[in-house]
Length: 81
Image (cartoon, one colour):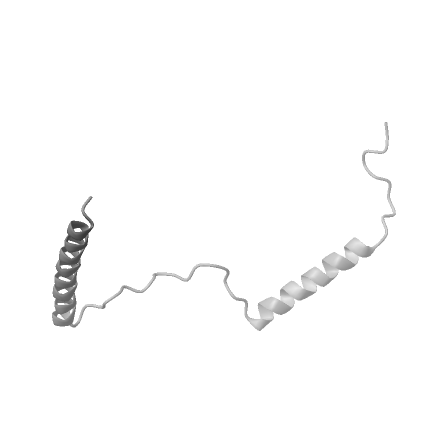
């Protein structure tokens, strides 16, 4: 492959792309009222909690872990045989 020809082809492609980009930018400017990029519909990820919800979860987890720390007083259910 001729390197000089490849470079010329790339320059031609570059000029073509620059013309297309310029025309699209002009269309965007003339549209005016249309937004450039549409905003995403919803935020993804976890929903944040307000302080009262956070307090409820905190109390619920405190009770849960207190119960987990208590020693088991009954035999395991699979012990009889």
